[in-house]
Length: 437
Image 1 (tube, rainbow, N blue to C red):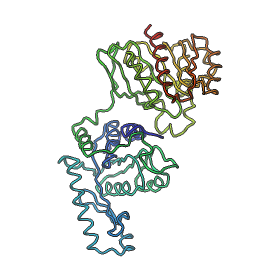
Image 2 (cartoon, rainbow, N blue to C red):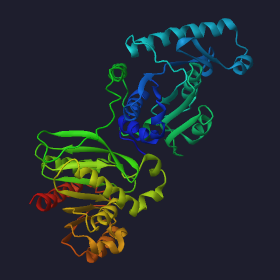
Image 3 (tube, rainbow, N blue to C red):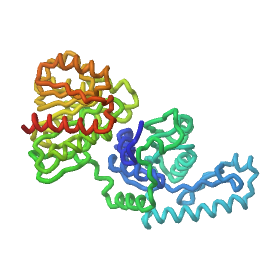
Image 4 (cartoon, rainbow, N blue to C red):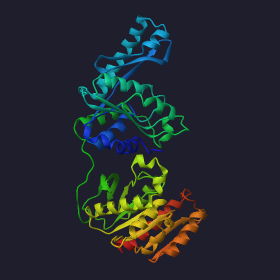
């Protein structure tokens, strides 16, 4: 699983932690990179956010070997076994602890800007980092949080190596990790953007949370008609009993909205789908990019081929959107998402204005293709022969207005220079012609 950045990772992680919403948890981010991830988790759960400052105590002659850790409030977690086997003198231990305690106090004051630490006594604490390398700091943080009085400790991270993940399951009451890839060498390789998190960003996020702006949740209000001003907001959609997260963009005066149905290995953060969505936005069309699967469901690849389930959720999300904007709606589907879009569009009461498939698997909609009434454009790369054959068969099964557009030289992901721009232009023209007319 590849994350766009820490914001994306936090939003996906939040969906996997929804079951803790009713426990009034405290979310604790490990500085520095864990705080932007924790901020998104706290925002989605409507929870308080704080920083968990932990300093590892390293053996004087082998600093990477920790003999313990300290946290705020005078919390000390010491491994007597390492102290004994290392034959460490009390004077050496005290010297290390004194130096680390000074740095801990400096960091805590800097990050909180003078605000007091949140009381964890009797509460559920969710410890969040942007990823795990060895797991030593995360494990120490869990011990510190428990010593500070938390009644339940949950450790949550986007990515970790399998061996570290296995060890950390015993460090907390619950361990939540979205991805444990076998080919793991560093946390940063699983992010498109893993730029350093500066102190100022940590301070700003914690301040916003303290002011109450992190726990404001996602907008679920209602609106009708074209927007008078540009709207760009994260939304929460209840579809078939599942909470889905999406990004709604409505240019001022938008007279139609295109919903994106993502396929296998993709999400609303897909750079390819966002490229198309931005082209539609520039043309004055609204877009809703949302995930049809939760992060936990995405881990099971079989779910991306559960076309009926995906289509049902798309149908429910469409009804939700109709309550927000009384304008024509179209579907843009990629890979298996195209099958879900066509299946949803085939329902007798679907009322979908147009469908575009990019590198899609419309064949997976099966006999329901004959029931699609929305004008449908199938876009396939010329160097994607298997999918091209499947699209030709699907077009023959369609009974609505349809067209198969082949982009010469393009492969399945349209990564060739200019190929994705052609997809965006074709989709834009199709939707403008059939939704806005």
